[in-house]
Image (cartoon, rainbow, N blue to C red; front, top):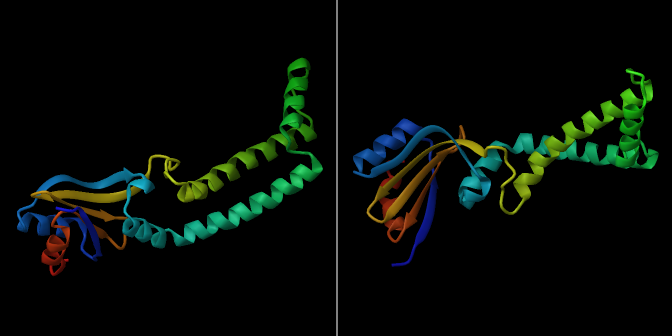
Length: 183
């Protein structure tokens, strides 16, 4: 039989989903209130649910990216934030007997720290759009139940709101229609 993958959205919490699976005599393989999952390992429905939940944060990340890009352009024009400038500064510090930094050096260090902080924020957004989603540090936090009935597997994922139940296997559509009334 051909593998199928179908999903449904629910408002049931983790405990309620567990009870539904137990009532249907499904074998629960995993039940956790907190786990981390790679974006690339989620189905498109699960990804959409997470993106809707994170929309405001993602829009802020886009705003940060625009600000970051403008600042990089400005710094590059002024040649204040080039790697060569930092290398020269660190070389001069290594050769100097003085243990203090002048205002120019302190300003460069502040810019480097700001650059690093912005880079982290931007990389968060960039990882969402990467093909494999590897970049999320630790993955995306969610609640999860994985259950099995025969050769079909059911996965319940919740990102605080809009839980998604995904059915995979040769009888996924039939199992979905059976459980849909309870969800």
